[in-house]
Length: 480
Image 1: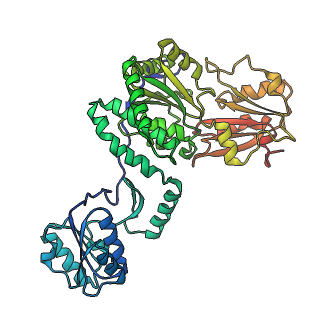
Image 2: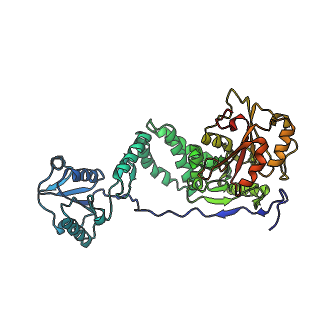
Image 3: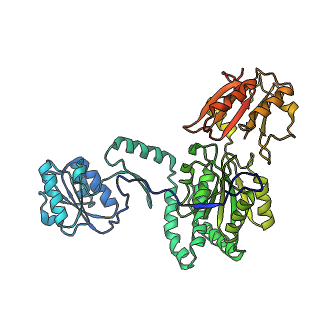
């Protein structure tokens, strides 16, 4: 395998990777257009009344067949919401219906209703009898025309209702007005005959405004401002942009909301090996994914190749996300990549991520700057450009017993690092630990004193990305 001139490690090229395949679905979620179409409802219970009202709210012409209808059904009939026939259903009643729902009193009736619906070519739902159903009702969050459906495939309706309540609490009522505005503005967007990218830019700007000001009603001035910004963008140079996004130490739940938004609007994602695949799943499926991993002492992409791929994609007009493990500005070659963007005249932004030190400390309940024992917090790398321990580290600072030192990329050079800090005067009994794969299910922690650190290397048989914490924070109680 060829070697990289930059590092001497095995070299590899940036490699496109397909998105993950769609996992199995218990049911396919669809939104059924019922406006003006006939729907048959059979049964007279209070429960079926809710479904009849829901169907009418969706615009259906609801015909209810019930010899002894509940009061709720009678009230719907009196209000003109449904048409009520006080008799049992017949197979002929199902002909031409878009949907048929039955609250069957027995297994026999359920089977007969399903058979009649199938013969009539009608989709059928039997209340509380999923074995007879083509479709099932789920919990609904209504901000129409923004509608969210939630299903547990009948396994746990109460759980689905709890999820609905959580979404209801998070989703502002004002989103209804923005969704209505989107529907009314769409013809004006279509009339401009914009390309796919321009349309997406418009709706992303619309969405950002809606999320920023959900509680006010959108105005024609908002629409005009969005169109004006779009025209200005179209008249400018057709170049793309780069976003340097921190993916955090591993746990997908630690990714910022802004990072998720950029992933969902990206055309191309250049990602490191340390990025959890579940974070890539947050991106829109159409985005091209290019692996540009750099791993110590393993086959790695050269920095020049990464920068070249980034600039080439942005030069085509793509919105590029350079997705980096941890925080882009912490030992992530961010400065070099920003300099390349500036030289190429590309717009860029930086979205911070949680660096491994903070993720590890949080997962272990460590205080890195406890006021009784740590006056300073310092991050260093123990891996130079040549792969060896850097000679220009401030050894006096690293030997300060009142500091918390976090060492990145230090497992391979740990024996040399320990020898130098002990030589500089750090007490050998100073607490230390090695944390691998911080914040993930594979996280492992090895505790020791500084002088015992070299002995831990043999226990890291197949280490993930690791950091070393030295100082009082590494003690058993976090304050030593």
